[in-house]
Length: 209
Ligand code: DC
Image (tube, rainbow, N blue to C red):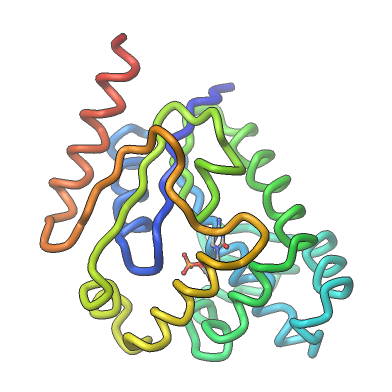
């Protein structure tokens, strides 16, 4: 059992998934995309016709669904990988992610998933370094300009990305914010390799001390 964690937070399109995946691969560690978990619960609510504004019903759904994120995202055994980034999910996921009952279930699951790994885990999301793993080995906060982030999100567009940023940063429960002591990296105009290299250098300098 290893409890080494690299916690990567940042707004939509800041490069979290790409960087986290590449860092995990280089280190031979597990990778956990927590945004995919909130998206999967949202997919299930839309498919079952559960009102995403109904906090209790959504909390119950989040508590009882079967969720897997690898190799593909499934919810209650249904493969939802190709639905995760569709417009209805983009629109509803911020409402679902602002629900404290949903967050409680997701945070518990995230700690269990990382705790069950035989290697360290690279975990990415919005509240990973602030709430889920406040004692992470390394905390990273990625940023990039809004223009570059919406370009990376392709069809989602500037307005949708800006709206989600606003919702994720201003909600009451676990808003997106920089953790104390986080390595802050602006990925605008940076190559993935450069950012990954910087994260691994920083991890090595921490663990060699
Ligand atoms: O990273 P993403 O765009 O796939 O995240 C989807 C939504 O879930 C986004 O609105 C932010 C939210 N989220 C969150 O609140 N906490 C996390 N740890 C991860 C994602």
